[in-house]
Image 1 (spheres, rainbow, N blue to C red):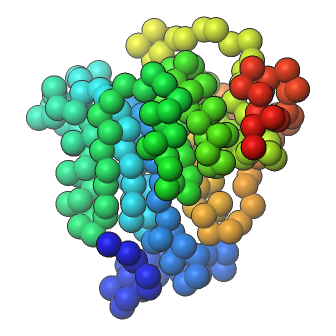
Image 2: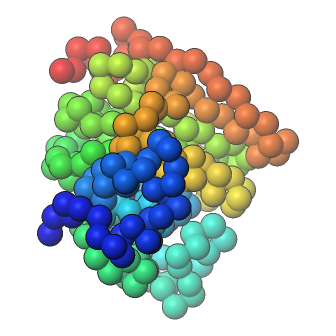
Amino acid sequence: MQFTHLDDKDLLFYSRHILLPNIGIEGQQKLNLAEVTIFGLGGLGNLLSIYIASSGIKKINLVDFDVVEETNLQRQITFTSKDFGTLKVDVIEKFLKEKYPDIIIKKYPKKITKCIQVESIIENSDIVLDGTDNFVVRKIINKACLIKNKKLIIGAVEGYSGQLMTVITDKSACYECVYENLIDNNSCSDTGVLAPLVGMISSMMAIECINIITGNKSSYENKLLIINGLNVSVDIMSTKRNKACETSCIKIK
């Protein structure tokens, strides 16, 4: 199925987007034609899937091997107790299709262990959204996006800290440029997570995605956004490409 134009129903449904000067009809059509891949359907990916679908992106790839558990409900709002033991990709697909019947969803209930897996999944994607909570997996996704020349938006939340950066091949620092010496692999099950902070970071990831697709400038290219949820402060650090980067992002073409 191809979405080649906005019909009367679309014009009404997305009217509040279309009124925005940096989106308009042309930008909304770009959103409707875009394909986005979301890795990780936990706190970030769960909310991201809603924001992305409601913005008019019709083709979404969902990647997560995990099932719904009771501890997820604190911050993963598409799930209920009836979903315990069910694959997250299945629950979110059902949730989105009930609200947006014409959406096209591809599900990948698999654990990411190799770069070639990611390369295959993102082949036709315009934007890749990384909401995983595993440093090893983030590095794999980062490398695959560099190889396939895909724009990558990375979000993370741990404890009271939320972070966001965008990776653009040949233009920006990549994930390993910024986190070259990071070996810690704590997750929210180890350190806890502030639920509203997950909402903040996922919202900002969705906005960045929409801005890039509609032809507006990335806000986080060569920047690292850090939000402290304890005192609600925001810092933006400049980043740069590292010639010693293990991913060799400067050499990847």
